[in-house]
Each structure stands twice: as structure tokens, then as C-alpha cells.
Length: 227
Ligand SMILES: Nc1ncnc2c1ncn2[C@@H]1O[C@H](COP(=O)(O)OP(=O)(O)OP(=O)(O)O)[C@@H](O)[C@H]1O
Ligand SMILES: [Mg+2]
Image (cartoon, rainbow, N blue to C red; front, side, top):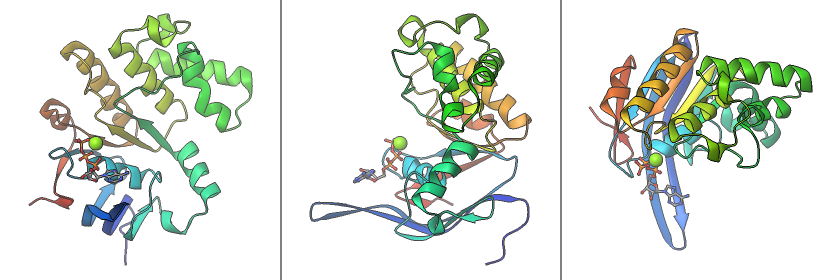
């Protein structure tokens, strides 16, 4: 397979079958998709169409049942578990619909967590976490616990946590799902800025406003790319 030099993500005939007891559920059926470096792509489609599964495969959280997934030239299927965790910690910023912040840690410590995993020294962690919080407009909330923040602010802390490692690839799963329109707009601005600074952004969304902000929309239906 020849891969264009400017491709960051290349999925080739990816299928994913989950086994639950005697039941086999096919979540993806032969998905081929290329995302260019620096591109912003929205993934849309009905509930159950395979969007989260696709994102998890690109982020190395799950492996395909067949087919391949290359990210920045690495075939994720050929990596060891350790290599996969290094890939996730250094290369990918994840943003989930549920913010997944640790409730006992103030905002800046939540943001600093990926730096701990990446082996960054403590003083440097605080500096970079504060800079990331400033980027999402939350410099003034660094010492707040998650339950002292609004939903939109919590999601922006989660985005700061994703961008603190300066990821080449940002994967977001319905990042505005729980937010009102003002908070949505703030979150969208964060993604646009990330994209403008060169990160490749893939965002799963039900929200047409989010998709409009991206350069391209890919629609999944029943585990296949529509159209
Ligand atoms: N761990 C799992 N075990 C078994 N089946 C699963 C698992 N994860 C997902 N599925 C099934 O795979 C299909 C695709 O799920 P997926 O979560 O990718 O959908 P989605 O497009 O993200 O939906 P939503 O918009 O509701 O989040 C669904 O039918 C789902 O029930
Ligand atoms: Mg989903």
C-alpha cells in the first residue's frame, strides 16, 4: 500500500467485531479513511454507527479485528502494549464527552497528569499546565476542584489536559454533548485554535455547528462510510 507523505492517519479496510456471549456485533465493516496532517475532520452518524469505535482504533485504545490503522507511519497493530501506551501518551490528546477529571485534584493538577506519565519534571509540569489552562481561558480557575467548575469549564480543563502534551493528533468524542450553546462556542474555539496551530483534529459529533467548523465531514452508517 502506498501512503501519501502528508497522511497522518490511514485506515485500510478496518473491521471491528465485538463478541458478547454468543453474539457477534459488527461495529465497523471495511472502513478506509485517510486524514491529512493538519486536517480537521468531523465524524457524524447515528447512534451505534461505529463513531466511538473508529476513534478508539485511531487512538490505539482498541485494535481492529481485521484491516490496518497507520498513524504517522506506525502500524498500530504491530506495536507492543508498551509502545502503544507511549504512542497514546506522547502523540494523542483525547477529549471525551464525560470529562473524566479526577475529582480530588485541582484543575491544574488534572491538566498536568499526562506530563507526569511523559516524565516531565514537576516544576515544568506546573508551568506547562498553567499555560494550557490560559490557552482555554481558564487561568483564573487553576486551583478549583472539578466540582467547583461549570460543565463548560470542566470540558475546557479536559481540553487543556489533552493539549498540554502538544499532541500531533487530537481525538474528541462528542466534546460538546453536555454543554449549552455558549460553552459549546468556547470549546469550538479551542479546537479551531488547536487545528490552526498544526494539530490534526478528529471530532465525533452530533452537532452540525461543530462539523461546520471542520474542513471535512465523514458520515458513518451501520459501520460503513456513507456516500
Ligand atoms: N465493548 C463493546 N462490546 C460489545 N459491543 C459494543 C462494544 N462497544 C460498542 N459496541 C457496539 O458496537 C456498535 C458501535 O458502537 P459505537 O460506540 O462505536 O457507536 P457510536 O456511533 O459511537 O454511537 P453513539 O453516537 O451512541 O455514541 C454498537 O452497536 C454498540 O452496541
Ligand atoms: Mg459514541
